[in-house]
Image 1 (cartoon, helix red, strand yellow):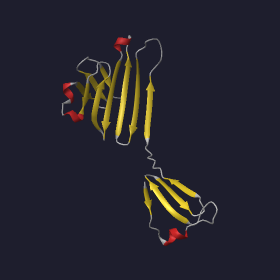
Image 2: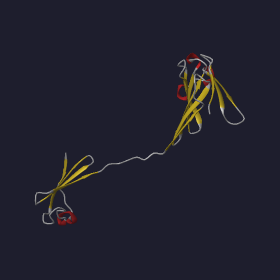
Image 3: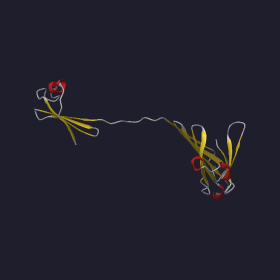
Image 4: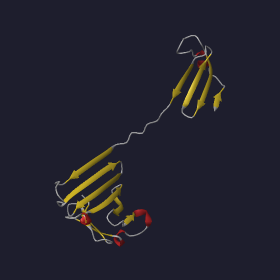
Amino acid sequence: MLVRSTFTRKMLEEICPTCGKGKLVAIKKEENIENRQFSCGHSSITIEKTLRIQSELRLKLKGPKGKRKRSKEIDSSIKEDFERRTIRTRGPTKDETTVIMIDWKRGNLSHIHCKTCGNEWRDNTGENVTERFKIEPTPSGILNVKCMKCGRESISG
């Protein structure tokens, strides 16, 4: 615990906010808490809290519901310079469902994960993405992604 014993002239003139009679006698600071003690016995505690506000866009698109109909579900979230998309394509049976997660950082592909078989690529490993996934861009900017391990295919959007 730190106790500040040096006072400025302004501090010596500070009066108790509760009763208006006591004068400031001590200030104790500990991390983000400041305790001001007055000659009348009252004390004033100030707690500083820093909040970080971050914007996020979250989008979830679902295809038609029904009995094992072939449908697509896209879950996308964007935070500052990071975007994650999880694409789930339901097949006629549960074993034919494909789930691929794709991440971008600052507009560049940074991570692909086939949740169906566990195949995964990250840009910070130094490994070439084509060793694990086949990626073909379409004219509309959407990527066709094929897992080289299980052969499942999906699109990025």
